[in-house]
Amino acid sequence: MAETKVESLIIVGSGPAGLTAALYSARARMNPLMIEGEEAGGQLMITSDVENYPGFEHGVTGPDLIATMRKQAERFGTRFITRNVTKVELQSRPFKVYVGQQMYEAQTIIVSTGASAKWIGLPSEKQYMNRGVSACATCDGAFFKDVEVGVVGGGDTAMEEANFLTRYASKVFIIHRSKSFKASKIMLERSQKNPKIEFIMNTVVEEIMGDGKSMNALKLKNTNSGEVIEKKLGGLFVAIGHQPNTKIFNGVLDMNEAGYLKTKPGTTITNIPGVFAAGDVQDPYYRQAITAAGSGCMASLDAERWLEAQEQHG
Ligand code: NDP
Image (cartoon, rainbow, N blue to C red):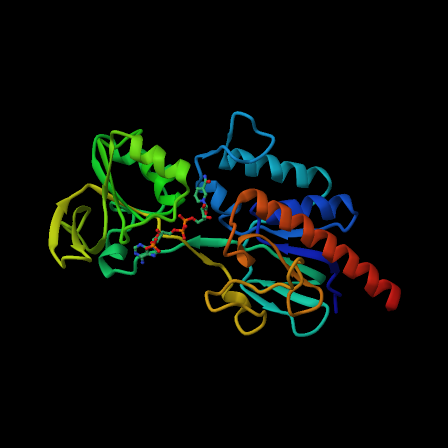
């Protein structure tokens, strides 16, 4: 029977956390194998301008930043598999990672599967997905030239999406369920100063309406007065936060109630020795590209030290 090669390290997920872990591990001669996923690169792939990643004085686009990180990791020997992990077995070592029928074995694993956009959860939202409803202004904004659109949410993502959309849309309405914002001051002010942006506060989207082919209006409810109005809009961008991608680790790795992986404070160590977690998948607080990259570096160092200790103690 052909023996499966046991890798030193498999990295699952290819955002800034995974790619930084790959870069460090490759330079440390750990010969990492990255299973990058079919939608490789993570959330930065749908981020327009990154102005706060140190080292890029004039900013950089998310896809460019990821492409550069990937090349840098590859330069030192990282190998990539552009498929999704479908199953893991972490109860005993070597750990097993499955991509469909294909099984890979590894002594250590770094989980950096990130988080994905959340949806409101209305049936009509599903019905009109990609028919007016989107969670990515960078991807779909250009389809809304001279159209009035809505953005749901009150955080930085909503502000960023709204500002970006003003490049195309004739008007952007930020629809926010609360009376205060989670968004940072600078991002909020930018939206408030933008003449193409208007705010609709204390309001939730009750239904997305359309002709079956594409959406054309929203049913909006004011949470103070209970009043329901219909607003004609050609598009809706949902920007209400994120959900960690941890389904395949359910019941195996410790998580909090929102599904974020738990790590030992100040480290990337999970409840399973030899398995480490980095980036947004374990971070409900900071969720920045730079913090993800930083924790990817930590995970690589944690994995390297753990492997060394295993070798020393047999
Ligand atoms: P946040 O959690 O910060 O904000 C989510 C917003 O969506 C809140 O205003 C929340 O309302 C609202 N919301 C949540 N669920 C629903 C729902 N079911 N229906 C209606 N509204 C809802 O998420 P973000 O994605 O905006 O930001 C996440 C992190 O990423 C933050 O740390 C942010 O700073 C960062 N970020 C930074 C950027 C940058 O610097 N360039 C760009 C984008 C994000 P409520 O306030 O009522 O809870």
